[in-house]
Image (cartoon, rainbow, N blue to C red; front, side, top):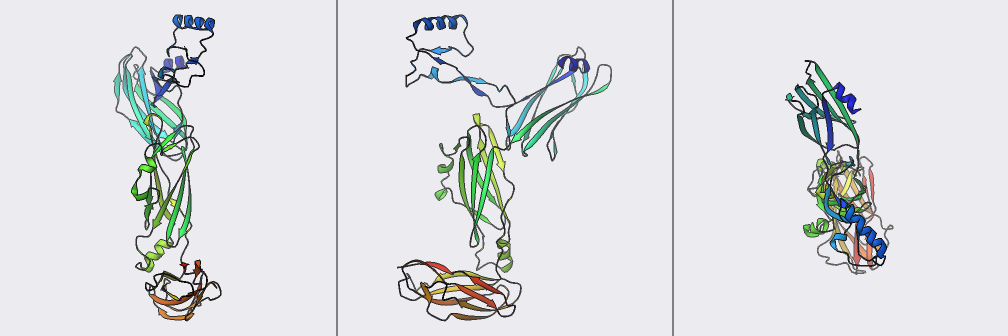
Length: 421
């Protein structure tokens, strides 16, 4: 194949991927020194035919617990990869390309064009100006491309030149490789009132150890993210020391809380709808390192959720009255609830407390409250009195809201949970 290439083209093309080296194996063989005959034979063999990696065996007993440095399975010698290896999503593919004039004549107007072809796009990597190559002269160029897609990648190389006979000729070569996913990211969304709790699980899907240097969540509007993984902002507990190391098959879990920047009682109807109906949460930006400090960076696509929607009548805030510092058994207390119209029309709201749903904390005041006409976005506060009949943590305050104009009804399971002393 090589001879045919040289006959048809005066130029040859060689491509080598630029990868990090590895440590060479010492391949030291432990030997029992009691076998003197075998030891003498191996000594003579080592002196007559020394190996590239040094001695081929040691005098250490098999039971020795402490081994010297020269018996360590890895040497200080660096070895270049013998194969292409595996490319992962988020890594940077780098290659050295050598175009050499193997003929005895001058080759003129040598131009090199290199592209990276994926399933969705073609990215130009190199398009140099024409040069002249003397007999035996090489031309070395480097290309780099950040892997942003999974699947098949094709490195296409096109060399155009003017032959010694004055003919315009073209040499084309292509190199195909696969890009695998190094990290499997799974998410789970939990709703907590207006806030969102986002659980993230990162799994090492490679066969090598990875070191996570950073995992950052970039929220989408209208959310602001709070990192619940590092207490008091101390990220050393997450990424310092051995905390960031992930062995093959290991998984790490992280938690983020997404909040709306405006409190519900201060937000307009449009802002409240933007929060409740937002489906895009944000993106994860992950930075890791592999062997010998090789860097990889992965940014997920937009993380989505199923919108919880919103009711036409919302309870913005419900809290125990400040005058009641604590809730005591068989002692009445007051709860202030703020009811808001978030529909597109004026509503006439009637609020009713369901006395049968939570019998351990019974209403002891009026159970029906006429809120009157509520304009769009308008809120009104009501005071509800309850009597606790059992100690412990109790859930209470089941209510029904009815709009007498449209007939819309909303049932609320409970207002609050309280500890009864």
